[in-house]
Length: 306
Image 1 (cartoon, rainbow, N blue to C red):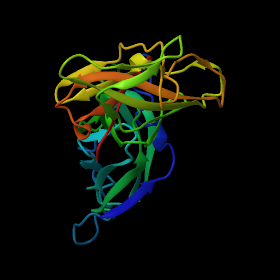
Image 2: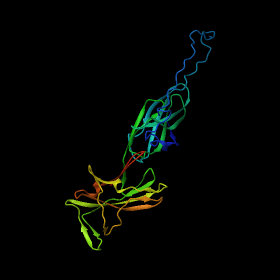
Image 3: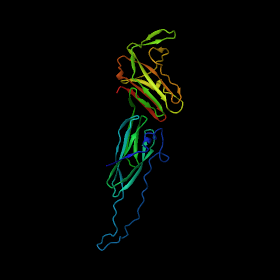
Image 4: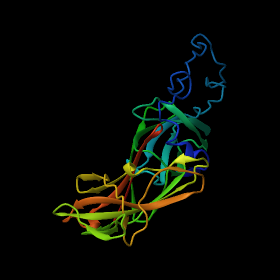
């Protein structure tokens, strides 16, 4: 089987079929199949014969005819994970022919949308050709369905939350860069009050403190509001803990607390977010999630121990 790579338009996949976009025509449905046309009747027409009674016309092999064979695409992928999207077409006709078809995509909330055109080139009679989109990346959690031309066979891809190592960088679709470090677990912390005296603060009985360092940078090209503390949550087992702890004093031995706000292009902001968790929760059990709902879709990213 001949395998050919698609080197253009791959970035369009996963980007156009969201937010109720529509594709070709008014309703976003794939191009309709061409109407069939009747050939002139030849029942009453005699073909000239040679002396042996055989037709003198040369019988040409049947023209090229294409059938869809299979999709080669994973059933699941993480946000920003580079995958390959392959589709195999066979020429079951009697002659070589060129095959070019639109590629459509949809989600549960959108119609079929034309996202690219796939040029298989010339396919020889009896030959199978696989066209492959390389390094396809999806940015939002959703279910995507793909369809080639007028073929009925579709393929579904479920995009799930990204899983990153501590300290790894994530770039949001709008251009923010975010890093989250492994939490520091403390049984108590010292702080300096307004009078300058040092005091110790402990959590509720059976709990510990989790300090999580967060770093963001605005590379959106415009002044925007940075991610907020409510966009981050601490998770362990089947439990999620949101930060609701506002520390008004200076914590001894630590930098400033993370605060969101308007950031100009190129400006960074960092600091810690404080969570209170049960003392039986160990660092390797903890993950920090960043989630955001946008007009284009939902973003969910988790930093955790590999």
